[in-house]
Length: 266
Length: 262
Length: 111
Image (cartoon, rainbow over all chains, first blue to last red):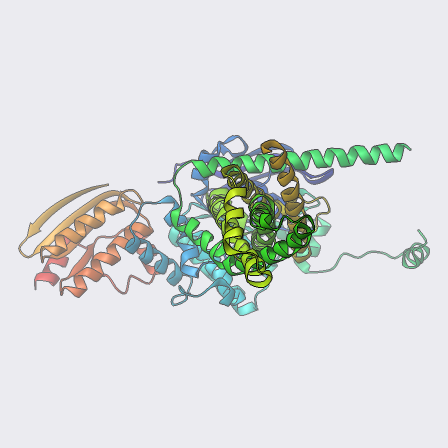
């Protein structure tokens, strides 16, 4: 049963390097219980790196990351394992294991972590598949699924253990508009019914404005905005305005400089 | 001049780091191998894939190798009038050297490349990350059953190779050339001692461990590669590397064990 | 999780309380199936259930299925709003017999 603490995810001054290159430069972020936090930002802003840090897959150069109040960089393997059963993750490409069926993918955490008998596990698997509208696909292999189905199967696996925190990496990107909307709706319904706290990484603006309670915008490794949907429209940061209005950044061209770049005489 | 030394230093550091990472990887795998639960079903499945499915190939390889060995030895032995040593020559060369080494090399090509590619692809499609995030130990889930299967399959395949080779030697020596059947088998019986079989067995165990270790590690640690090539190209590089390194490691281990036990 | 089991005529009543999660759902499941195996209808009183997860829901589904194949009735009494939302998400609100009060349920089952 969920412990009653206010912040589910707390990131303090997170700094992260890849080799000698600094990717994240002092990230501060909190996600409260029951809210949907959408993290946006351009390519190369550090979204995926931030995600990997939250999941405990990367070690930070400095800074703190607390999930459910626990500092994840200092947990033992078994403590981290236990914490991870409360977190459901859906990766960008689904990341389903291609050697087993869809149903086996979804009940994998159940089989590994619980001692429930097989009938119960089967029913739970089918329940999750029904929730994401994939009933009847339990015997299919992941390679047989379409893009939208794959994303939904990943969602089903993410909620298999009834997590308290869900982390979604680009849940509706790469999908046609109708399927994308369906996924958004599904995420909203799941959040309400299962009382989830959700962190979503996306660059799809419409999705973000629809499902977010709060939005954080990353730019070059820093959080340049963190607030509600209403507040983001009032921001006078140029980058954010560009993001909202979908205008490309305007690079003024300096004639000689440009010519030099084109001909490679630099 | 300074450039050379600096480059030497960088490479030296890099290789030492790689060796350390590989060593830690092996240690992690070994620990999980000997702690329960033992996944009998998974191990059996791997033995089927690695061992049973390789048996025809190894059988043929053994047969032809035995035939070639018999042919070559006969040609030499006949000059010294020692043709009755053919049986022991064929037996010893197969059991001590050719059996373990050729089996291991073929095993690397067939099984090693497959498992390296499989794990490499899992790495690039975030499947291994997904396992970790579900609180599932990827070493236990992916590696330990392969290690056990390798330790069981390679010695068995080696034995199969040896038997096929001796049969091949028989075909050439007795059936084709006409040495007496008794001479052949007597030579075999007298020449081959328990030490030789032991050496062959220990070699095959060591080779099995080395192959599975290097091939799984290369696939698993794909994301740490220096050139940072992630994706299909990365997988192909890593698989090629795995087969090459395993092969060289097999030959090196062959020499080391030989020099210790002889 | 605690349970209290009573019998009224040809109907068993199991009152569950507390949390029904991965640890506590197997015993709950057993209780329900045992009651049904005695050829009684079954009412599960959910008034005191604070939290139920998928394994709990799955046990309810199993109980319902068992009842159906043995021509018995299976009803849930006084589910919370949270539980109702979960059932709706899994489209089970249209499958289960749901009652506001125990008396209402008993009346329907024995009537």
